[in-house]
Image 1 (spheres, rainbow, N blue to C red):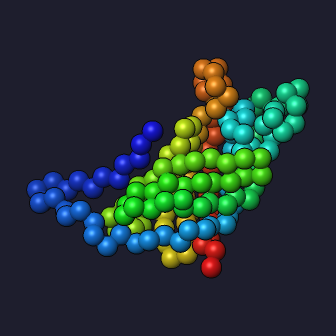
Image 2: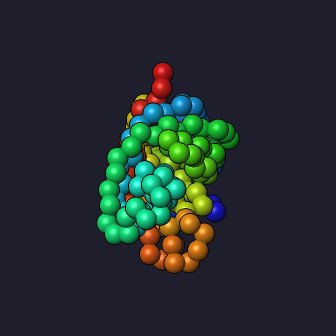
Length: 152
């Protein structure tokens, strides 16, 4: 999987590669708000791994939960991130825009565009089922929004 940030402008010379990309704080604490059809990922507290298969919601469901985001590595515009939830974690890669105001992240099944504003990182994304089969991918999907504050 890959993440790209692109800036095209007709009739202009290409911009120079970013030289002064901001270094983002390493630790962030926040909240995720999710709306799903089926249980798209194990970060959902209603996933069968947490409840037992007989209790897994198959239709529309929602949740809000705490998350911790850690920037494992940043090399200029390029990042590796870890998002922890109570039952596990997700690894993402990301690309920070040249002006440092947007961060596109993607993982094995999830992607989001986050806005960087001072000590706040927020934005929304979507994901597909991640139980390892086509039926899960086809029938389970989610829309979610993140809101993080840098840990001082």
